[in-house]
Amino acid sequence: MALTRKFLQALGIEDSKIESIIDAHTETVDALKKERDAYKAEADKLPEVQAKLDKAQAAAKDSGEYDKLKQEYDDYKTEVAKEKALAAKKSALREIAKDAGLSEAGIAKVLKYHDYDKMELDDKGAVKEKAALLKGLKEEWPEYIQTTETKGAETATPPSGGKPARKTVEEIMAIEDDAERQAEIARNLDLFGQ
Image 1 (cartoon, helix red, strand yellow):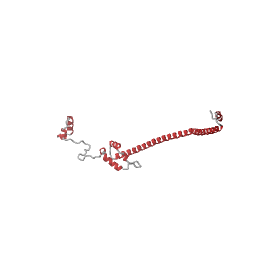
Image 2 (tube, helix red, strand yellow):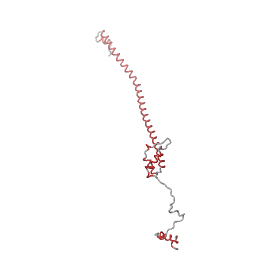
Image 3 (cartoon, rainbow, N blue to C red):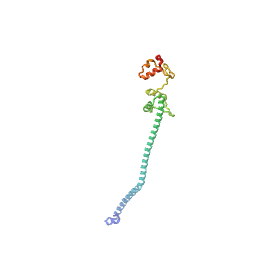
Image 4 (cartoon, helix red, strand yellow):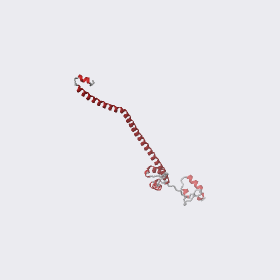
């Protein structure tokens, strides 16, 4: 039911008071309409704001995903670089261990237990402190150093020139196998006065 002049006159309200009531009512209704229109305008903006919010959230999510993937990639690159550097250090250390004369077992031990963090390579892949490292390997792993020597013939017993050395009578008689002893006597008859 609407508040109209006709309705107020039917209630028996005086015309001067009806005008005051209508003015007050109009002010209230206008204020409420103004509030309603402001809320409606704000409500009309809501889908646009929601779309912006969704887009911002998606971008933030994508940005976080990107950062995560970038971090994983950077970690992978770092790990590959470390493995490559370690392989280069191991290869250089293997060569130095060979130069030190270590056996394969010794080289395997050195490669397993060496502190690669203290080892530095130059830009060509060679060990910077090669002489010190070589000396250190020889001192630390002497039990794995192989020694190979070339010896000449013993001068006390020179080579016989292809002829077997003659046995003495005592050596021939000391042979326990009868057949072998008889064969040796037959080869050396001159020792037995024959």
